Image 1 (cartoon, helix red, strand yellow):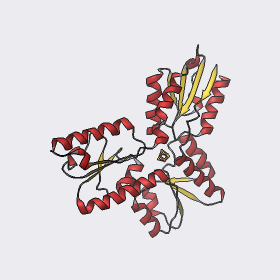
Image 2 (cartoon, helix red, strand yellow):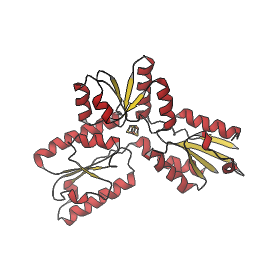
Image 3 (tube, helix red, strand yellow):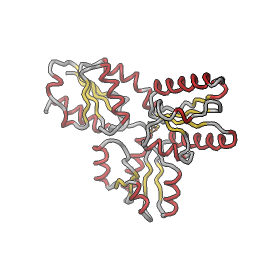
Image 4 (cartoon, rainbow, N blue to C red):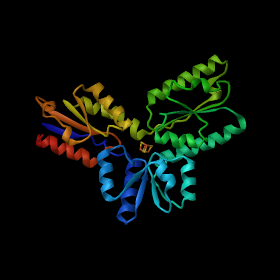
Length: 292
Ligand code: SF4
């Protein structure tokens, strides 16, 4: 059987950068705490914990003093930086540069809107770490929507700035933009004057979709490797499943089943942006040996 791995799978550069920053500090002998899970993948977390990384939550962070804390790729709201300063915490800021720029842009736009009025809308998932950081740039006063919720809070007669969490999908963002355009028209105004759509979805995730569709169509069976917590993983797995019904979601090589490969001539292995390359390689070796 031909076994092929998708060369676009594995960490995006933001996550890769955060993991490398953690490894570097741990290898230098520092005691490093990660505020929240550095990556949505249990196997990678376990590997980093073995190197000494300690994952903490916000309550533990608030009580911490004189320590080193890593900020993961998702970024943090301003409050986190204030607490760090008050508690003499050294930060390893591994916020992805794309997220950092988005935070800055939201902060600037929010400031501008204070003078002239209008709405700042964020298309994202409530409670997602990146969204908490983005909302924090506006003192949590931006309007957060999943495309349906909270739309009634938007003032359709004034300027509207629309931003998206970096890992949302293009089609959802397009349909939200269109909904807002229609509401502006209904309110008797010209959307071209009032609506500012900021292009903030990260290509590292979203441009993968068409390539993944091709990959899923090109193999008899698809093994998708991801942590069950990864929203990006769930979304990309759905893409595979839609194209190829013989797609299976696993988090570790132990979950592989021999019968999935019976009568199949080719297997494709792919994963989320939070799936480490070494794990994909382990899955490949296990399939090639068919030793399960
Ligand atoms: S998905 Fe994009 S924005 Fe998010 S961490 Fe990765 S590179 Fe950065």
